[in-house]
Amino acid sequence: MTTTLKSFKRRETTIYLNKVKYTGYLIGYLPKRFAFIYNEENDQEGLYSWFNYRGLTYIRASDLITGW
Image (cartoon, rainbow, N blue to C red; front, top):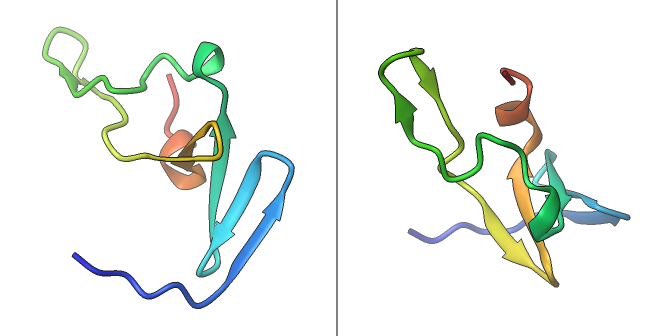
């Protein structure tokens, strides 16, 4: 899959790629849902999409809104 990058902005630990906001985390501060796929008992979904850039792990901000 190829994605064309049209715009890029960086502010501290936040990156905007093509007007989509991503939040950066250090490895020790990742959300509980990181790399967690699905929990049948609680019917909860985790985060399964992210990327690494310059020592931070970036997660789409809209994926974090549904938090638990």
